[in-house]
Image (cartoon, rainbow, N blue to C red; front, side, top):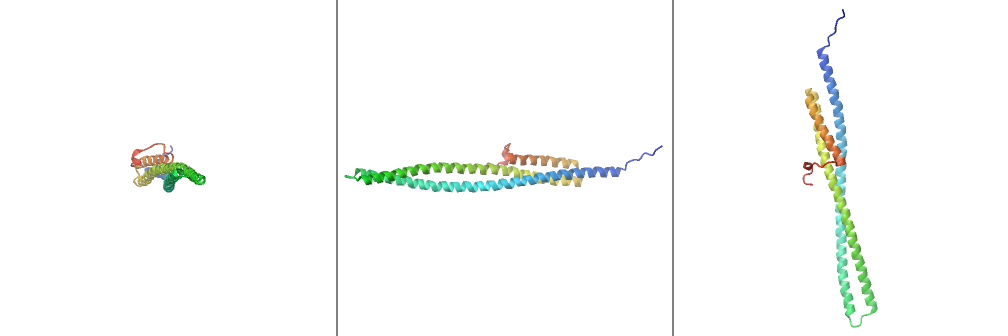
Length: 200
C-alpha cells in the first residue's frame, strides 16, 4: 500500500500568506496608479482655476477701463450737446460751426454705443472665466479628497500585510473605491456632493 503524504501545515500557511501578500501588493499598485491619475487631475484643476481667476481679473480690469472711457464719452456728449444748443441759439450761428458741433456730437454718440457694446462683451467673457474658475475649484475638491482616501488605502493595505488581516485589506478596498469614484467625479463632475464644496 502506498504511503499517503500529509501536507505540512506550516507550508500551507506560508503559501496562503504569500498568496494574500501578492494580492495585496498587486492591489496596492493599482491604488498607487489611481492616486497618480488623481494627483494629475488635481494639479491640472488647480492650474486651470488660477489661470481662469487671472483671466477673469484681467477682463474686469479691462471692463473698468472701458467704463471710464464710456463715462468720459458721455460727459463729452453732454458738453457737445450744450455747445450745439448754444450755437443754435446764437443770433447768427455759422453753418460751419453747426456742422462741426453735429459731427462731434455724432462721433461721441457712436463712441458711447461702441463702448457700451464692448462693456457687455467684456463682462460676458469675465463671467465665463469666473464660471471656469468655479468649475475647476469644484473639481479640485474632489481630487483632494480622493487623494487622501487613496493614500489612506495604501497605508491600510500595507498594514493588512503586516497584521495578516484580510479585514483591514477589505477596508482599504472600500477606501480606494471611494477615492477612485471621487477622482472620476473630479474629471467628469457627474454628481455634486454638498459637503465637499464648503459654500462654493
